[in-house]
Image (cartoon, rainbow, N blue to C red; front, top):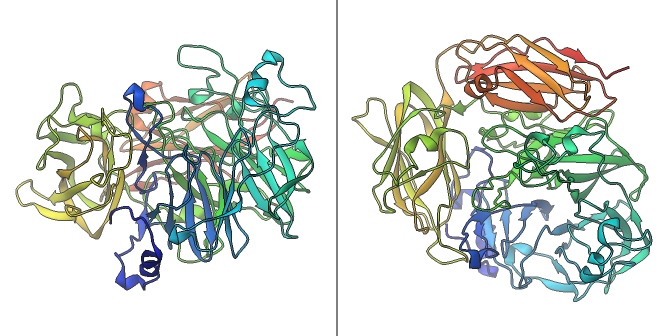
Length: 614
């Protein structure tokens, strides 16, 4: 459906029984399949791209609401799979950036990032798009300087009794006793801040804001900025890491203050937590950090998001994967399942985190059980296009890299991209990931939609329809389609209908399924911790038939919650040695490796202890 400007009538339609609506997919895949909006900020530089970042998902009145940066609206869903865009009647001219949202059970509150006082919105039924003013203007942050004044202090930073402008990147939290708290901060100089607030209009701060904690990259490897925690920009320029994305979760009587680090631009973006017994601390660093981390694969990055429970009580963490082709802040939205161990360790799983997952319909004890077992049959498959624009060849659409793409010779109906999977495979789902190559769009238009068909064939001669979106009125930059039934296919073909952009460009045509080949053998491996305790080198002996490997580690043999996925050919390019640079000093770790292929996943290797230095 075309993104809707919801009215009361539209809201009533949303309440219809499921049978009256479009059939709901049984599975889903990251990036989350929403109609990401074109950004306006680089209009005058001629840079056009769709983006989504800093996601907040809230369950309110048994419906999910997704807020993010610069969408001029938000999305609602009944099942975390089918999302409908809502254009509200009140929204700031400059768009919400890294918003805060919280529900008290009856009303949902929405707050934008700001450097000076801005409104706090409230709605009982946000699916209608109608919002009221909870207060037209929030109070100024006590002790905060103006944006201009902040710069006058230079590299020394602000005095201890002054705060930077804000609240930027806010997070709202309502405790069990009904008290409200506000958290905020986004900087590579200043820490996060928190304060109790009185929510009664016009809202006021209670007491002096508390300086919470900041980053310690000299102790925590994952907090270092840059690709693979290199510590700087690609040209070698050193840069201090950023802390942002405050979010509070209460579990088991303890308070988990989540933060994003070390910066959104690269694959290393992740979420960590500090834990305390009071909503304003003091907080202790969790030695098992990061809690959500995804440095490898098609979806890279898991930082700056929210933690929420679905209606079944399952825990989820949202994050911001990085694309960064057109602009360094070109991003998408991801969700990862997880939970808490009996002794309170918070964790989320990115193992196979950009492959199809089952959406739970009840409580789930093991988040990894949601993985369907469907693998990318399309990786490095032979690809043939009906036409090509220069260097943007078809092979770029099968490399599991969102920053490379195929561009057709013309954006016209009937253009095709055909993959040869190398043999008959069981195909379950297809994901079409479009790229914005000189798209020329900087604002919403009625004609922004994606139309296409997916065809399949066992022999390359007899073609049948796998999915038909040729009449779609919705834009789907990362369209995920599960077939009504799996098919035994050797060839998969994308047949173009329409995109609003100037060019037809596809970053990856991902085909998910299985083969009859046996699962690969368990790989042998070695791991050595470096002289710098923040790093370890994992050497993997390749095994026949492996598509790739998961290096898994954690702070106990049965808590291998962190994963770095790497494909077999990528591993060969680095001499079978993967550098893991996300460890904490003074913490003992355990490592293991598994291999995977369309035939399945190998048994896990032995779990190897990697102690900290004495």
